[in-house]
Amino acid sequence: MSTPSFDPKDLTKEKRLWDIYIASKRIPFSRFNAITTTLVFVLLLANSWFTTQPVEETIELVRELSKTGLAVALSTLGFLLAGFTIFATVTQPSLSLRMSEITHPDSGLSYLKHNYFVFIRVFIYYLAFSIFCLLIIMFGHEGGLVPLLASYSPYPEHVKFAIAKASYVILFTGYYFLVMQLKSFIFNIHHSVMTSLRWKAEGYE
Image (cartoon, rainbow, N blue to C red):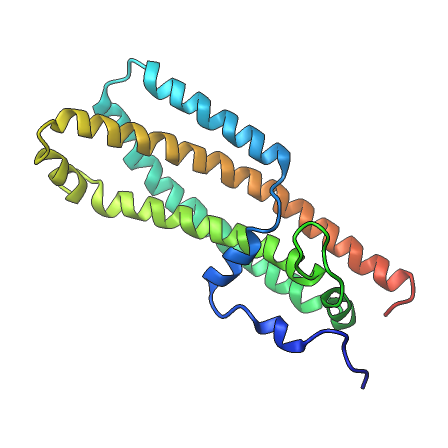
């Protein structure tokens, strides 16, 4: 058995999901995703500021779409995890080990971790969005903790307005951001499969 040119312990260096997320921050974002998400965020800010929609309707919209968002995010996450598990299982170990020996120039991670962390980062985003929606459902309902705390403020209407508008902007920005991440996830799956096939076609198997 040949000795690998890297420390095998590096494969299990990350002990928690948070460690993977911190490491994945070294991987640059898609410029298109970053620019369009920022644009959507700015447009949502403008829409929330200039809209004549009553704040009560905004609150109801946020509550309803947080329920939808939780269901959609968890369902999509389940499909993505299933697909990724199958993909990771059928990938040739020889290719994966070779990728572990080469450093990606953009992130400084090995090509194996760079590619896998891109996928796992998408899972983390879907999980974070699910938690955000769940918190709105748990504490933002009528009579919940957030409305109760807002009522104790010296300016309850202003606080309610600020929380409703902020939740609206964050929620819809999150929706768009996850769609962009799904787009990138699809391409990364395609690219990984083509890389695996090229590896075998060029006789490295």
